[in-house]
Amino acid sequence: MLKEIKALWVVIRTILTIILIALLAIVGVQRISNNKMAVAGFRIFTVITESMTPKYKVGDAIFTKTINPSEIKVGDDITYLGTAESFKDKIVTHRVISIEKGEDGLYIFQTKGIANDEPDPKINETQIYGKVIYKIKTISYLNSVIGNLYGMYFAIFIPFGIIIFIEFIGYRNDKYDIEEENENKKRKNKEELKENEAKDKEDDEEENSKKSKNDELKEKRKNRRNKRREKRKNNR
Image 1 (tube, rainbow, N blue to C red):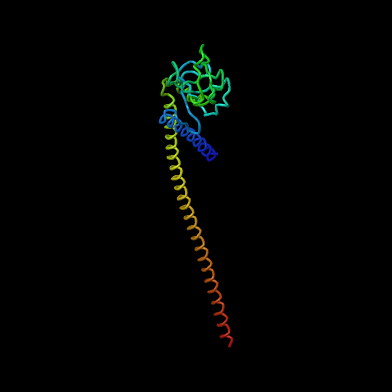
Image 2 (image 1 turned 90 degrees about the vertical axis):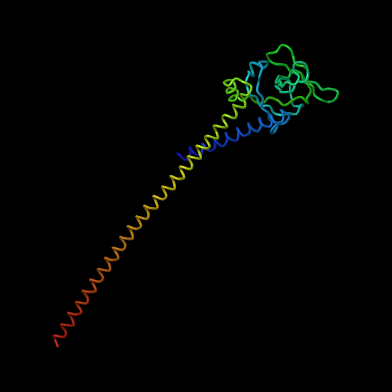
């Protein structure tokens, strides 16, 4: 039963490590490239305004996936880089309320925050980072606890540090288990050696006993032969 639990923990630990490494890779690539690059089309953003409440709250971490503009539909939530008015150079996550196609063949989208009264300035497909596909509830909760713009990074690095610590403890435990197993093997080998020595001793004693009996039998036979010879000698 203990082996099954250990095997299950190894699987869970491996999955968590892979997930955290993937999150770190996404965040790292985004920060280095200033959001211009994504990992396998994925990006992670943190909500910093209340424009999309109640669906997304301040501090929520959201996953976006690069998507073909032709696949975006009215009602989808998208993340884009603003270029006009108060949205200039800001990363915005709002809901698509209308779609059209410009004379240059590019799709043009108009978005609006759920909690906002006015729609955003229109954007084209080149400004879009991706479509929101998932809200990471665990990181969102940690963000709300930490309560600052860097919460998402702490929410990733802290669990990653915990995983490393757990890995270290696991390594120590595995090392202890190996040492304990080696000690058990040595103890078992010693017990087997003693058992074999005892059996060898028993075999030697049995062999000596048989030898002694054979010697005794030979002596009896010799005595009988001597008696017969003496008797034949006297009869002459």
